Image (tube, rainbow, N blue to C red; front, side, top):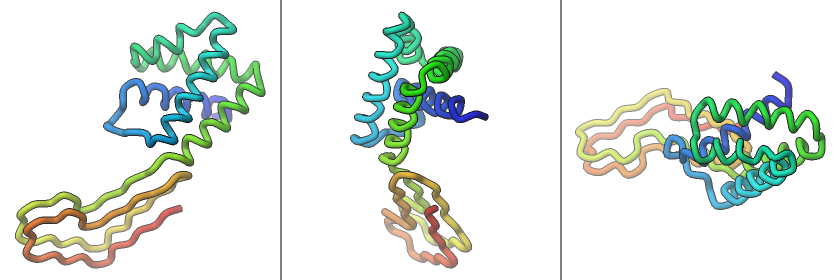
Length: 154
């Protein structure tokens, strides 16, 4: 898949997720500000070609079909305008760096007799920050045995 297609796909996914507040995923303050700038940049470009409605449509009616239409048109505009494509790539990179990935194991457990976990590896690959936690907020557990727990961030 070529770079413009990947970038357009990631941008369409971000806008789609922002419209849906998908999967309970919340963007941090810094990422949200950059997403607003990204959307504004796209809106300004689409206004020039009288196609701003495509962006509005995917924001107001976030369906897979509207996302695909928006992504296709965004790819076309990026292929025609290198400075526009470069600006979007840079904004996307900044958004990805400002996002936080959270990985949790054994979190928010109440009233259990025994907890045993062995040979668990948590791996995260992220341009932004990563929060990893193990055995957090455990209440009224009698026996906890953890062995061979590893955390890796790439």
